[in-house]
Amino acid sequence: MLDACELQAGERPAEILGDAGYWSEANASLQDEDTELFIATTKDWKQRKALREQPPPRGRIPEGASLKQRMERKLRTRRGRDAYSQRGSTIEAIFGQMATRGLNRFWLRGVEKVQG
Image (cartoon, rainbow, N blue to C red; front, top):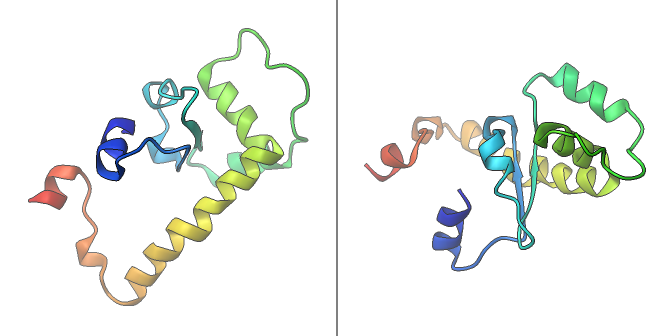
């Protein structure tokens, strides 16, 4: 994912925002010092709402925390909330405009279908 993004843009992105469809241990492990990831870990809105209502985490990350627990913790911080909230206003607005104008026939999944 990061390599394709770097190939298209010519540079590595500083931040990547992804919905729960992009969550996997493999994608979460791609985070490095150049790129910070903010990926939702669950598709269920009730679980996401429960996580949002918890107080922001304080202190060090527990040693035995999994990648999923670390990402959930990061998304609950002020920085994580601010970064992920940008996703809704940038990406979802585009999908809304496309649906309103009847362009949903162009919605394809996968690079092969888009290029074909």
